Image (cartoon, rainbow, N blue to C red; front, side):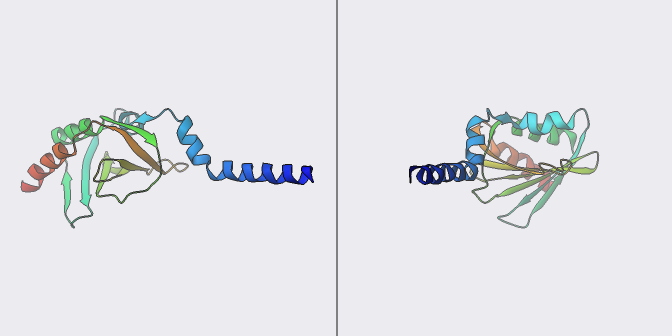
Length: 152
């Protein structure tokens, strides 16, 4: 009887561990940054354009201006990230093109709490969800740049 009880308890514990593996992995993950996940992987190649899509309206804004691209990427680089789950709707979608080729799709929640990074080149981990643990970046600065771009 004790042996069966022990087997049941071990099975239950194993099931809980498997089901919560992502949560356990998140606790052990020291975190990362936008710079490490995106900018360092682009290497020395040039971002040729950023395409913005907003779920609140059907606007699409594309910028190919190197100065605007660098300013936006610099603002986004201030994000510190930790692996998370996809729990909120995304408001802003950013298509990052490197040398004319789609490289990343970024989906950012409007409350600046989460970002989803889709890496078109990584066949193993194409979609990664992150919780933004330090949202030092200023989304309003990005919106100001985009307002200027959309008026041109």
